[in-house]
Length: 337
Ligand SMILES: [Zn+2]
Ligand SMILES: [Zn+2]
Image 1 (cartoon, helix red, strand yellow):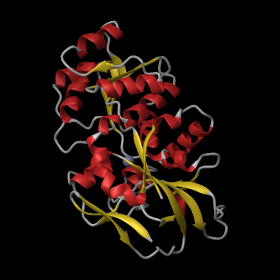
Image 2 (cartoon, protein in one colour):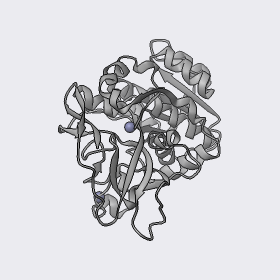
Image 3 (cartoon, helix red, strand yellow):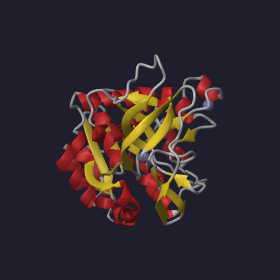
């Protein structure tokens, strides 16, 4: 079978590999669509920490069941996505029902081979059926599940004011699920006027603010000086993550969805006087995937508006540098297999 393999920084090619054989408790999936995201860009450009090459990438997955174990409830031809966050099942987080932050987690397409290939195998428990969704839609469940999980962590109170920093696909996902959770206002903050314009046109987040010297004044004006009850950082930028605290209201909740290798630092008086609730949000749970599948199926999420680029598997290695160069205008690029 054909597979897209990153063999080193800035080196990706299509490789011929043997078709994987499902072991006990696994399904074989005929892969059809794979989304490309920031993680893949970082793997390709060599800036993903703790990453080992070569790697068959791809963790935003959709395909059709080719083989499934007897009694699994899955049949050949069923359209599915895969929860790529494979937990160990026995560590302290797994025992507490939080497999998304398993201490020995293996992420398909990052720590283990992923799905940008004609076939992949996956454990039955990681397979999420997507009845009623197209192949395109099923491949866009994973990145939205990240936002759904962050909003679940935050437990937003209806009527709250929400600020999302970073208007890429993850940030827009947070904003959409915050709106679904009953937020009265959802404001996006981003350095890129282009991204804010897309978020306004495609998803109705017309209240965008450009990050920069005038941002604080504008955010204060929108909240009568009180700032925001819930703040989601989807930038992964350490300056933005540190500076974000100033945009949080007293009694507010700050959720860090983005990830950075540096050390977070806040002035403690600012953190303390707000009685800040600080949360990290990592990956997503199967329940988040299921919430996203339902939201796409019932039309709550205007899913097609995410799909801005499409490329065939054979062309994907050559297309990657170009997609990275135009990242501001890429919401979601799908590889078609
Ligand atoms: Zn991703
Ligand atoms: Zn575990």
